Amino acid sequence: MKLKPFLTHEIGSLSKPSWRVKTIRGIPLGDKDIEEAINWGKLLEIEGRDKLLEILIKRRDFKKEEKEEIVYFSSLYATKLIEKTGIDLVYDGEQHRVEMYEYPIKRIKGFIFKGHVRSFDNKYYRKASFIGKPELKEFYHVKEFERISSFAKKPLKIPITGAYTLVDWSYNEYYLKDISPGENNIRKERKGGKSQFLRKMAREIIYPNLQALYQRGAKFLQIDEPAATTKRDEIPELVNTFKESIGDLKGNVFFSTHICFSKYSLLFPEIERLEGILNEVHFEYANRDTIELGVKEKKRKGYKILEKFKDNKFVVGLGVIDVHTNFIEPPELVRDRILYATKIIKDPERIFVAPDCGLRTRRWEIAFKKLRNMVEGKIMAEKEIGI
Image (cartoon, helix red, strand yellow):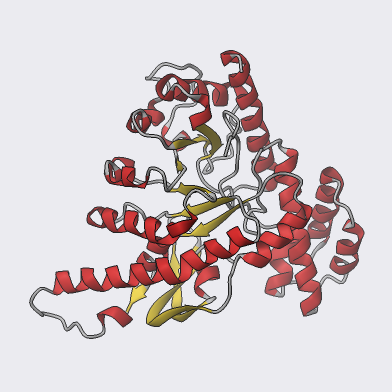
């Protein structure tokens, strides 16, 4: 698959509009919520937005069909927002999903939810316990893919939470049920139980979902693994789950992985076993970097891990936007980050440009400006290099 240099894409999440969040949660809408739908609808030139406004004007007591329409429009708005920034590969920012863990777990047999736990960015998710053999209730991203494909004007990339993160963020009761405290070799037994869990999830949950998306025309799929380096002795297991999850789809789809806010050096050299299986490896860089202009090492201190990619064949997913601040990166800063990466990697076709992570903690106004400047900075880098 021939792709252009410095291809731009988002990573996954955007915040959800207030009118989408409140209607799904049963909270009455206020004037500001409806104004938001009107203003963004005009800015993004959303076709058929009058239908959305006819529903929202009720303000409360929405029927099931009306809620489904609201989610549809939320997806449409978010996709058009991303397209308007000029990005090459688009998505709807998880408008169909609760979040990256609970959404898939609800659609897999063998899990029961235990309660809410706090995640790193002061958000909460419902943690589940694995109590039986995993089995798909449905292909849980197909409807989403088909819906977004119906109105997206640019190529579409679908993210899917990987097997390792789903397992690591769950309690493993089923494969540990025969282990008693104080047993000899308990660590070995626990490790073996987790390995079984990982293989099952990779082969019987993630692979079938990826396959279903491929069969319906998906060309770009992203496997998210935020838990990747939380247990350094399990990195070989992480790599194995990628192999099991992708299987014979290798070469048929452009596969990327996103691993955020981790100690990336722990992944090497083990992750290099995935050359030829994974196409792109995306890390977070901007969060570690200075905001000063320049292409010298002391200015671009957040990009040290790039040295690990000099001698392999991965496409480098280059995080150039810090998603944890409202600071709007000027195009010149994005340009310099790309130019610095090019000095190390040499080949512009091996560098894709993206934010560090999803933008769900930023307001749409901020996310839009960040992404627009990212595209402008990419264009400036191209001119500087002469491509």
